[in-house]
Length: 70
Length: 186
Image (tube, rainbow over all chains, first blue to last red; front, top):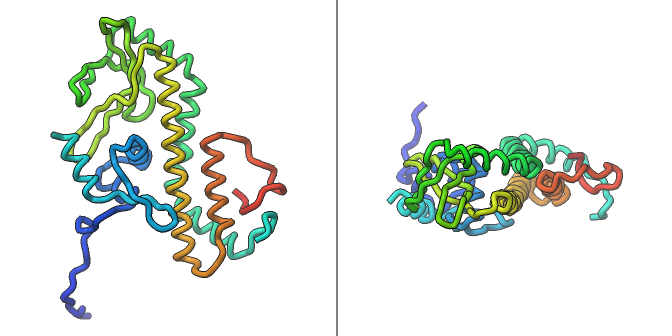
C-alpha cells in the first residue's frame, strides 16, 4: 500500500529543545544513576515541566560534551 | 479521597501496569540504593582496604581532567573508585568518577580529603541526595504516565505508592504493616 507523502517531516530527536533524563542518558551513553549524579552536581542543568518531571535542555548536553572534552 | 480508602480495581490495575512500564527504572533504582547501603555498612572495611592500598602504593594511575594524578585504591561502584595520592600535607584520598560518554571518557574528583572515612561518608551522603532527585523525577514521570493513560481519573494514590516505595528503598526502612498503610500493595 502506498503511503501519502507529507510536506512535514517528523522531527528527529536531535531537533528537540529538551529531553527526558532517560533520553539524555541514552544519547550520552550512560545509565540513569550517572545522569542523576550529573544533575545533582549541577554538571547538567535541568528544568521542570508539568508534574515536576525533569527535562535536560539540548544546549546543556552539548555544553557538557564541549567543556568536558575540550 | 479518604486517607484510609482502599484502592479501586482501576487503581490496582493502573499500579500493576505502571510498575511494568517503569520496571527498568525501579530495578536500577533499587540496585543502586543497595550498592550505597552496602558501602555505608562496609565503610570501616573499605577505609582499611584503602589504607592498605595506599601503603602498598600499587594500583593504576588515574589522571583527572584537571591534570591531577591519583592511584586507584578500591572500586566503590561501577566507574567510581576510591583513590589516593601522597602530598606534602600527607596522604590524601578522593572518590573519582570516570564517565564513559559516547564521545569520550571524562574523569573527575567527586570529593577528597585526608580522612578516608570522612571522604566515604561525604560520598554516601551525596548519593542519598542523588536518589532524592531520582525519586522525585520518577514519581513525576509516573504521574505524567498515569494522567495520559487514565485521564480524568484520580490516580494520586498510585503515584504516592511509587513515591513511598522509592523513599523506602532510599531509607531502607522496613515495610509498614499493610493494613495501616494507604495505597496499593507495594
